[in-house]
Image (cartoon, rainbow, N blue to C red):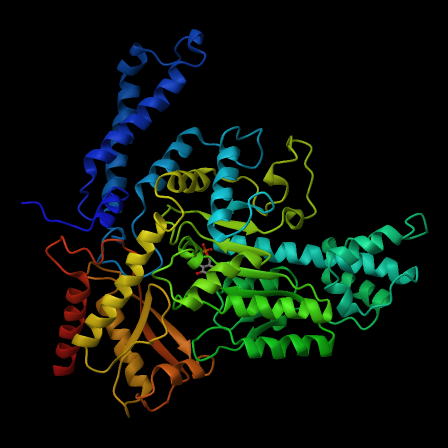
Length: 588
Ligand SMILES: *Cc1c(COP(=O)(O)O)cnc(C)c1O
């Protein structure tokens, strides 16, 4: 007898191979066709050239010996990968990866077979067009206008974040440069701080007035100068030079440290924004810090908000942050680059028009993304696309153009994004995977939205199962999305003891060996998260003998974690398995 399921779920079931390879037939059929087409592509191209490998060649002992070697090593490689972390299973609830979708897998493989290099159209006739179409799909999903915005695929979120910081830096250097000349010619009399956040309209205004025929009145390229050289010149020309700062919440991804260091800002100028009771960026602290920058004359290189924090999947108050930035723009004429690091949460934007599910704050924040200057989104996280696939989006094409290195041997077309990417050679596989995903599943409420809703629901179900089965479990209530963090401990117990217990739970469900479930863990700073911890754990008073709290972290990305068709109910089975472990370890 067939078991019934929600018609909503049926479509979803064709998008993945399934935990038991339920869609094996479909996958085999399509892969077979992909290879067949690929082979035919070759056979019908330059076929009058004749064959380079003959039937006689294939009969030689050397040929046969090589073939045997390839055959056996393929076998060995496949065998070795059988010990890989089984990320496809609903029992894997550790890091931000899980199943890959079938359209993404097919798209990725089709691209691999043709091996385009998206550095330029010369190396990728089709791949580049697919990339632009996929970028348009991502722009639309996030609320940007694809006629105005643009972007490109990267190897991941780290590089996409770098792309944003480079653009913010380039924009600032253009503004500083024009202000310097205008000041020299007596056309403008602002401060160094004002010059750094000048805005394009004033930039244009000054450019129109400047007499470029005057001696030494060419724009300086601060972007290309060493930080020492640039700062000396700026100090001489605008006076009172002080280092710019990056205002980024304390729960940021560690890529921002690399960015601060490698772009020459210095780690000390990465100023963390405090976290509020929701564990997200405090708008009042951000306000204080912008004021502080203004009073100190420290230009703001960029403000970053996070849509889906790496640790807990939390969403910064993007709407309120954007409002604050807009206010400074209106009252102080400040133009500050706002970047959204949505490496994890970007795909939640597919739910931005949802009427019946997303809570109001969540929805407002998703709909404010479109006002930010740029955004990072990783299809290789919540897009269920194979590695390596990230994307950088920018609201306004004009702000995407950074000074480019010209190379005589690449025939760049003016539309090629290869001019403006930090990476050189780039695979088209990520773009193609995302393209096929967008064209089949759809980057909207009815497509991805449906999958992501399930994952959020999975978080709720697991929370209930844990609360029912684990005495003294502590799960923050303000978890927004599909990541759950928790620990187990009694009031009065020392944090060291709680952390040791969390470590034991991690060891029990660690991905280093075969297990029934796999989780990940993280450690949060008590001071950074103090308001959050107080608001979330009002009845838990541990003895704070440690400055950090270790938490088990589960990412509920697998679309089948809440399926009712298999013989196991994963949320309950996991909670019971954990409860059993805790009972056993208590007895010892
Ligand atoms: C994962 C993540 C990144 C980095 O992305 P990679 O693809 O691992 O380079 C950046 N920011 C956030 C918020 C992330 O979750």
